[in-house]
Length: 177
Image (tube, rainbow, N blue to C red):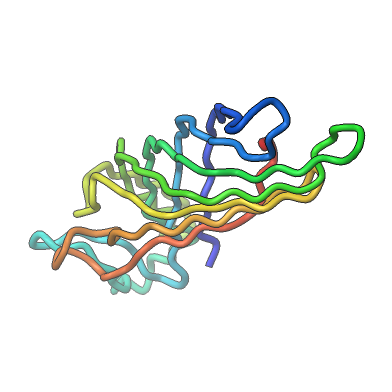
């Protein structure tokens, strides 16, 4: 619970098929940040070449926050259908396509309380995460409200070196096509 995804990107739109065509090609770089949060007194660890989740054994240490965070640069490529009203205001759009990306960095962050004192620990490492990522994504928009979904086709961790999982992100786009 509490895991989150944020990206900052630039969209370049190329209209396909003429001046009033509703079909566009969208491309543009984005910087993406994922936070994989854990509940309870669990934490992410890398031991003996394998990344996993372990429960804290010290009863005096209580975690307020435990997360594995990643930063990546992605390049999406999507086809978009964008419909307008009689005054050429955008009313509805739908886009679908794929993306490729590269992990720039990763780290864990632990916030815990021990004997009434709060500590924040941050450790950088690879955590056996895949460097390259690729997947599918799409958006749907009505007037000013745009929703997105993104699914990584490759595993989050290298094969045999972490939990077998893929990333699914969805939410609201604040700015964009």
